[in-house]
Image (cartoon, rainbow, N blue to C red; front, side):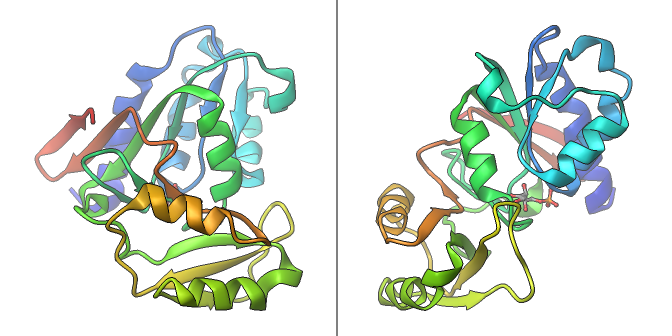
Length: 219
Ligand code: 5RP
């Protein structure tokens, strides 16, 4: 089984987590793209979705699932999304695709976060994958200097603009012993929209795909 097969297998397993007849929260990325493709056979079960990116919105609409504005939705029982790194406690780094802010908003508005990953994403400590931070463009330098003081090496993601019109600084060379404290500190820097550490919005269930099959981890 290659990595893409594993991504498809966890997406398939996540279909069991959907509550039929309710609004589904949908993340972003190649793993979620498999999920959306599989949802084509479940359209009748899903009255609408709240999407975390323009890319997922287009893909959902292409299979006939209505995409709703979060402001028009009272309840999202389940949010399904991938991650760049996940710890056994359910803390994650997200934002490899640059959709971290909308992902965090939809995750926080949902009752359950189901994270779907292949086994390469499981780590004991976050930070091997550079940590994305979405930043208001005028604050790029000032936020970069502040992030440097935390011990990492921020690098501006070249030629990338988020769906919200902002830039991404990816922090390299930092290992997070305390993801919760880090998330609060970074999010308090003026100019930061949010960072890609999901400690305040951990996954409730992580479905992991490996060569031997899938495994569920509930923190
Ligand atoms: C996008 C994300 C993705 O969930 C993360 O990058 C994982 O992507 P993929 O499923 O392609 O490996 O956070 O902002």
